[in-house]
Image (tube, rainbow, N blue to C red; front, side, top):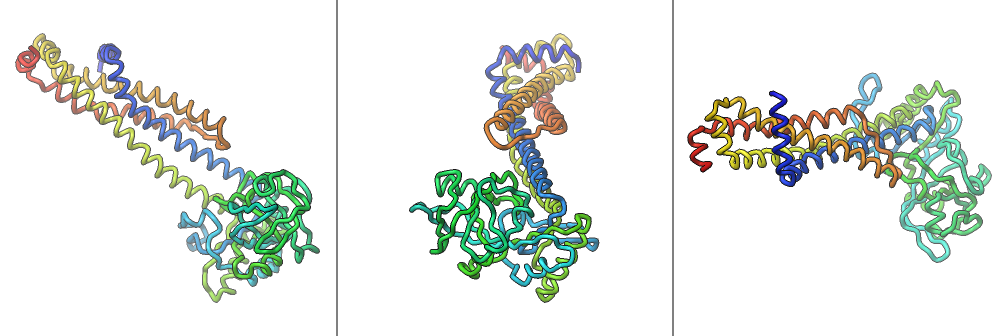
Length: 411
């Protein structure tokens, strides 16, 4: 295809700029959608990786429910997407907690009891959060500091004291440091003795915002709520970080034996937590990007339609060119060039707009999208491919016109 074809194509497109702009719009929207969705997925994935790594690579998480399938070597083979988010159903019990805490080589461990429901303070009801029952080792296990006050100690596990997240302080108490104030949970009063620094990560799993949590001693919560506050997690850290894998396997086998051979819990290392989360995020991002890519097809159809209209409008021009010796190939190449120019311009504008959209998201939200060159190159390739594929039918139709019939229709 000669460069002259592209010059003529560009001139033709400029002469009908509004029509051409609307034609390119589908391509632009498609590329912006795909690039933005993939970059958001990559940004969230990188953020989660950082959050998981910040807790430490030797943290062991025992989760209620069976969300993964392992192969004969113990490697994760299959992941249940629903397992990644939330706390899940309860299959853990106090005996499992004792197994983890009593395992040789465990340095720190804590159960996580969950109580859903509202909390009341100063006549205000807080319904957006949840209550977690833990023991004094939680801050060290999740490596989170208490910004104001302090966490409850070993001697206070039978007392009704609470440490709250930042969101609870701001929404329930409407102040940053509500130390000494009372929060009522299930009719029982708890004294606020600490406020956590803002949680930027999710050490207990995705979809869980610990800034909305109220932390109380696990024994106290069990006494107040009973079976309404089941154990949903057990966190543990080994004395020797290098023993994490061995200890996780040991804990898993001991809990399975305690459950009568039922494999109804999941024990994960931090690297496996990362693998589980990344796998689900990649699938979700790919699925949404595929849906967004439909707009690229719509853009391609728009190019085909406008080129078909162009062929009809330029019937006389085709007849004249053929009458003076233009070949079918030359006519076909001319219309193909116009389709390619439309798609390339749409691709360039779409990629540029993607950078703008991602910049706006970065400065206006907590999410930091990550645009990678592979996705940019793929977007460019797809935009050109759309032009070639959807420009083929109009180009062939124009090339096959009979010159005499074209001149007759054109008059």
